[in-house]
Length: 247
Image 1 (tube, rainbow, N blue to C red):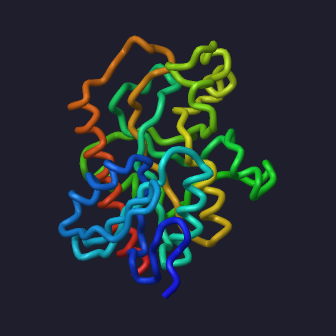
Image 2: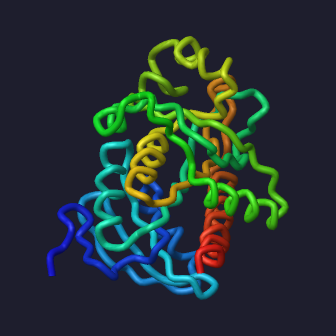
Image 3: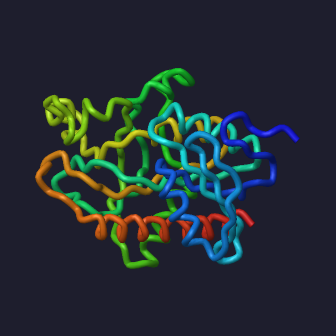
């Protein structure tokens, strides 16, 4: 049977819900929180595990960094049976009231990326699926987590708009800060637009690992890993709630 060109998967290899971290190693970590999981494939930056959590079959596929790589994963995962996508990632906080290690759940994405523009005109909105968004918020509440829920910004040039930039990143960020955009990252706008058009569901949950207002602030590796574990457990619970809703 023909395998997808980049992700090296065939129909039946994945569950209906697939988690999309960027980091290859984070895919392995997410799979470790399943009740059971098996390695399925690894080609390029795309590593896939499939297993079950609370009786629901689900998968995780790493996408690498950026919207071009993510769009390939989403297109090919849909070919092999994926219907729901949850990005689990990190970001840079844009609002002073957002702290490092907090949980952010995205309602929509500012389309600062180039990939989604190759698919759709800028007038097309990048919004999360309503039902998946509701499941993420409910799952956070069940774990006594009060997430920041709102708009995030996606863009392509990390070194033009991050605390590691050799430019005035706050000047670049000012329109989004003034618009109450919560954070900046690299994948959500394409995930939301492409999933909507392909009749799939998509949501994003993030943890700020850096702060654009306070570049001197740092989160320890242990604290960051704890926050990523928490956002992952919320995403897993949301996938179970979505399965209950659909079935």
